[in-house]
Length: 150
Image (tube, rainbow, N blue to C red; front, top):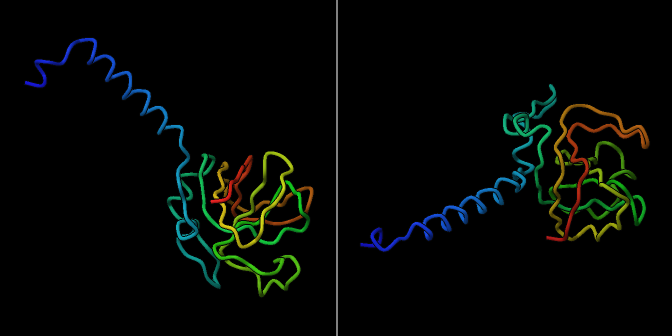
């Protein structure tokens, strides 16, 4: 009975709405967690996960904590799984957390308190790289990124 009441105009309006919703969801970045970055990690090295490899070059979003920054405004920060009380750059590499992602912002941005969870979106890059400006080496990066307090 419901189909009999559906007009051609209603059908086209419904299909247009569905197409609009599908396009909106298609533009949304894929979520990836710290657990989803590596397949294995240990003394013999690491392997990126199949998911991370498949998302290389794509827009992704992650949740985490901003490590205490080197300065109050910057074009990059380190995203960590857990909040850190001290600047990771000021410690030995033995204290460096395994679960980190370097985030390069689109522009110089004011940083937030290290205890606040942030949602970050950016293009995923994996593989060893050295930042020309800072000299920092990273394995996983989000570039052209933005964030907001989660």
